[in-house]
Image 1: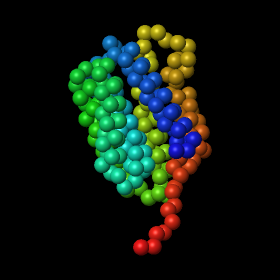
Image 2: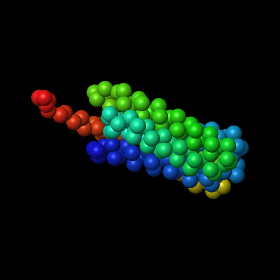
Image 3: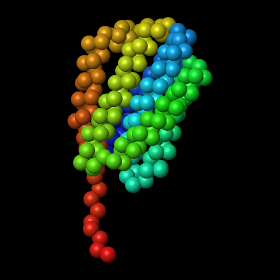
Image 4: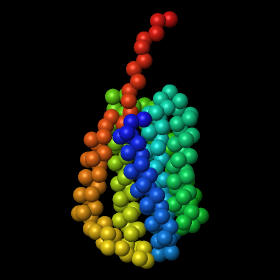
Length: 185
């Protein structure tokens, strides 16, 4: 693991847990349908990112990367969905399972030259989901801090997202390609 990959994962988990905590505190003001959409979208982002990463890291072990990716997506959906209702929990878990499976298959099929591009694409997609859900959830919180008002400006939010992704893109390569010597049999 490179420092860029560790930074990528830590930024994503920071935003994921921030959105999860905000969703928990705003659960009383959210309808069941909104809760289902929140759980489904966060589970989809987590499952795709985790599945793709694990498919790349455990290249050649599709069952392992699929099982762990599905588990990560289901856990993310259950974590957020449990704040709202049983239907939201179920929808989040099932979306996470599907996304983890698709991400693992995608990670397995990607050529080593494109590993960093695929990780950044999935990370950008998952981080965009976190930003959009935070944009939707933060106005519903009881206590509004001053910094939250800045976060509700879509232009400032878009600029912050662009700067964060640009900074993280400069941290490549995320996966060190291992070149094995040819074996003579």
